Amino acid sequence: MSSSEMPTASPAGLSAASEMALASLIQRVPLASSLATIFKENGFTLALVGGPVRDALLGRLGNDLDFTTSAPALESKKILQKWADNVWDTGIEFGTVAGIRGDTTVEVTTYRSDDYSRDSRKPHVHFGTSIEGDLSRRDFTVNSMALELTGEAPIFIDPFGGLVDLSKKILRTPGKPEDSFSDDPLRMLRAARFASQLNFEISPEVLAAMKEMTDRLGIISAERIRDEITKLLMSDNPRLGITILVDTGLAAKVIPEIPQLRLEVDEHHHHKDVYEHSITVLEQAIALEDRLGGVNLVIRLAALLHDIGKPKTRALIPGGGVSFHHHEVVGARLAKSRLKALRFSGEIVDQVETLIALHLRFHGYGDGEWTDSAVRRYVRDAGPLLDHLHVLTRADCTTRNARKAARLAATYDGLEDRIAILMEEEELSKIRPDLDGDEVMQLLNLKPGAMVGKALAFLLELRMEQGPLGKERATGLLQEWWAKQNE
Image (tube, rainbow, N blue to C red; front, top):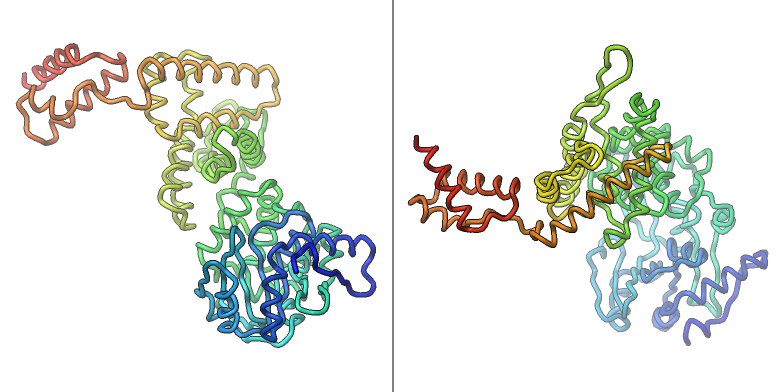
């Protein structure tokens, strides 16, 4: 029986709209019925559960399906081995077995009821006997719905009013939020992340618990915090989640440089709020992401963190106003430290650090007064991140003065045009000295060592200042330089 042939059923009392949503849900689980048939033949129940149910009802179901079952994990593994193309059991200790069929990944977990200790978010797992008990342990009501697939007809199970909360676009916990967050404090960050991903509100009692329980995040690993921040940042509306984290005090625990920006006012820019400016830069960078091939974590991190050096570099100017000299240098260092603490990869840390360190470079050359040498250095220092730097620099213009914004955009257009011309003429992305190390050693009768490096640095500097020299001219200039070294 295919999913499209699957009969529908719903509990008494569902509204017509809910019944339509249920029918839509059933139609959106293309492989679920064939898997359910095998579980049923073996005497077990199987239900689609959690996020896939929520997403299907929202019309956004992906290719990852979660199920819960009465079957012990070893039995689930045997069944999946008959149904899936590949099976793995790394979560079998917690009752979870996973598999993939075609382009759909499934996870099947035995009914669970978990206990938590105060000093750990890792649960003591107890395998349960009912789906209702399993649903009660989940984070939010909109994730506590299920579609039972092994009865005479599919049954929609919603013991905590998740469908109503879904229609109201609100996040609530199945039980008391204090109990839920005490069990697993990561759920507080998940609330902010789901708000961003789904554009939902958080219920007042859940928000109150988040504000009261920020210290509980101390038991969460940096890796798990990093993953939630990443998912939030990669959502369609990261402003909402970031604001929730800052307002509740959670951000002060996981990425304190962001709420600290609220304390800063950049008086050079008409009392611009640095926090609001940073969020706007993030949004403007997202709007330009097509230039980078789509959603891009590095540019989002760099945009959010690009001004975090301002609180430490703030200085009063005699006669009024403030300055933030070298905040890009300080900010790059702070960003590197924070991202390393959150266990981001070395590659991501280095890329974000580079972008923040370079984000003011464009403004150092005035209104288009760029020499060829300056353009070469800009390209060389940005390296493979040149397109990212283009996006960050353009996004960093948040002035409300339309004339000024247009002038800055036109100036940057001019810079990109200059880069394109020099790229074509000189292959800027491949800038190297006109002579290589072997040639330098032969000309100067040197062995490998520090002086060879100094000679190559001298040639590279010439290349940056004057463009391609050719081997003959480079040789003459190198020999003149060498003569002076030996005077």
